[in-house]
Every structure is written in C-alpha cells, then in structure tokens.
Length: 436
Image (spheres, rainbow, N blue to C red):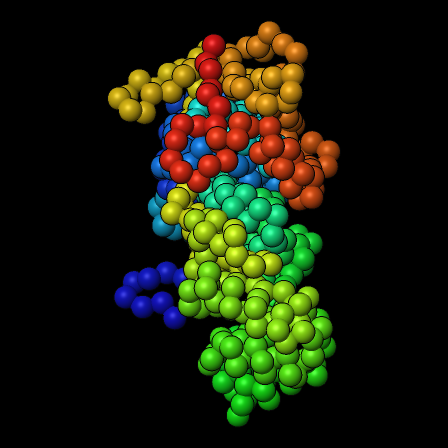
C-alpha cells in the first residue's frame, strides 16, 4: 500500500528491459525529439579504455544476452504511465517510446573472443534516439558478463585442465547468478550449481550437500548412509563437518571404496588434500576423487596445482569478477551523419569515426597485435577479422553462436596469445592494440 504521497503503478510480469536504463537517456531523447536531431544517423562504440589492474586480456561475454534483450525492449502501458506520472518524460517523448523498436544495426566481437584496451567490441548504428536508449542496458550486460568471464577464464587456466564447478549463486543477486553461471561456463567451467542457468542455457548442473545435512542427523555416518541410499555411490560426500580424517573413514565405510568423490570446504586445502589422498588410498579408495572449495580464486587454485586435487568449486570470486567486478566498458558516440565526432576531455578522450579491427598472427598462429582502423585494414596473411554482424534492421542475424561454440572460440584465442599473456601476475596486455 502506498503511503505519504507515494504512487503505485501497475506491474507487468516479465516486462523486459524497457526501464533498465538511466533517466538521462530519456532526457536526451526528449530534447533531441524537440530540436529535430533524434533521427541523425549515429555510430556508438563499446570499448574499454584500459583493462582492470593486473589483467592482460578481457573476454567478450553477454552479447547473446544483449541481443535477446533487444528483441523484448518495449515500453508498455505500465512503463509509459510511470514515466509520465513521475514527470520523467513529456507527452511527445512518451508517444515516441510507446512505438519504440530498435531498427538499427549492430556488429561486434564474437562471444568468447578476447579484447584489449580500445578494442571496438560492439558497434551500434542507427538513429541517435534509438541508439542512445541502449547505453545502460548494453553496459549493464556486457560489463557484468565480461568481468565474470575474464575472472573465470583465469581460474580455468590456473586449474590446468581440472574441472571447476561454478557455485556462487548465494553471493550475488538472483538474476546476476544466472548470468554469472552462463559467463563462467562460456569461460570453461565444467558445470554450475544454479538450476535456473541449467534450464535456460543447457549448462550441466552439479551439487553435493551442505554441512546442514550432516548436522541434521544424529551422526555423520547416518547422514552419509542417507545420501548414499538416495543417490548411490556416484555422489560426493562432504567430509569436513567434524574431523576430516574420521569423515573420510566414515564415508568409505558407508559407500565402499568405489565412492565417487569427497569434498573439503575449509582449512588448509593444500595440506588436507595431501593427507586425504593418502588416507583414501590406504582405505582402498584410490579412484575416489577429491573436490575442494571455499573462497577459491585464480591464485588459490594456482597454489593447489601440485596437490592431489581433482576438481574445484568456485563461488564468490567468480560472481564478483575476482576483484574486478566490472570490465570498465564505455558506450561512446563516435560518428554523426557519416562524420567523426571526438570527445577531447582529459583522461577520457575518444577516437572519432566507426572502426574495424583485425588480429594479426605469426605463421605459427601466435597473435602479435590487434589493428584498429577507421576503414578496413589492408589484409595480410594470417589476419583474423574480429567483428561480425549481430543485428540488421533491428533483427538478430541468423543463429548466434551456441555456448559450446563460444567456449571453443575462447580456447582457441587463449592458445593463440603469447604465453606471457596467461600469467596471473600484473603486466602489459597480452598483445598491443595498434590504431591506424
């Protein structure tokens, strides 16, 4: 119930992304409609001025989600009523929004590709008012998903082929949890604990049990027996509720030596992994896997590389970008009616005009530089064009790459950059970006 002069507005369920925007975008649209500039043909670019501290590459993620959101970007009666009664827009702007459909074109780097400072990862073309309305939605999706994907890719590299489960849903917003699971899987994680992500995106799901389940029972053995009775021996038993060594003995005693896995969620994981492996082997459970979790980031995973760990569970660090919760992307106007426009303010200058990009490689396939040009760079052997059509006339172009295809592309791109670019230590971007 509204009180103190508050208004209530009809709420639409699944009302899309129409109000996932900033007030100032509608302010600009209102003024542009009034002065006649709303239809001027414009080009906006999405890029990062720099990579987050310590990062040597970025990962493109979220493009598929963004294109999907564009198809449902509509201002219905509920949204228009709110905007008018809250005095956000005038009637002319409200009428324009009621008929809004994005009819422009979008090109961009494929999901799973890498990006570096000033890489034009997304190019949006169309009437100014249509394009400027997309700024906040575009940056909300891409800044989040690219940040998660970059953190996840670094963890995958640190894991050296061992699978990682994404399990960060309880450490972020419920909608962000689904998007995070998608980005982590794109970056090479093996599975997610988030069932909504599993249903929506076809990501394999995995889960074990919490300490609460063990504490529910009178004894640890009773909890293990219940889990084995219900799920069979191809399950994972959490053995660190009480004493880990005794927990392992209880697990093997209940399940037998062919128990699939145990999980350790606390303590000195390096020491505990060694001790657990020795104990499992002594009990005849040589094939029982060891899964570790508990505030793991890429550095903690790298520190466990030499230990007898079979897989990892990563949560908080993934969904918050492991210290870099945004990719630092911006959405800037670079061209109006075919003429470059340039922002010259100190520290935030832009380079005018629509750009294209290629990545150049040695004959061996190693990437050496990315070339960004106002036109099409003169082709050289082993060049790879980076931008591809995503939207034409407001409609998605064909079928976008699947998550599996994006996972494969990222693997290829990471193999192609110089090995120094995979280091977790701070340093220059993996390859330079050359502007012609």
